[in-house]
Length: 145
Image (cartoon, rainbow, N blue to C red):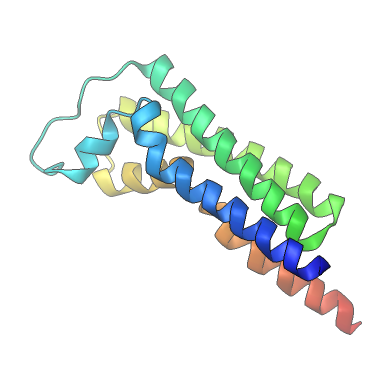
């Protein structure tokens, strides 16, 4: 029965990530959502409120990170993995936010794709797709020793 509860909890947490993805654009300010969905190659960069946009970017990242951390904890039940993940998410946010800010300030001079993918890592829970298999592989290696 414990395994069934774990699977149901993980499914619920993944559903929460899907809901953040589905409703995030409605409740959080991001002028680049419609920009990157349309003719971004031919349109100018939309006007945006930097502080407000980065606050909303942080809120979305934080929500995705908390849900991802819960997934890691439920999947492995190891606090050191969660602590490592918290540090990883914090450092990743700082680095990616700086890169995103500099790219926007430069008017996407280094190309729209760079800005697009940095933004994607900030607004989508991409790191869980990296951390889960890495932790699983690490656990498998430790169990073989």
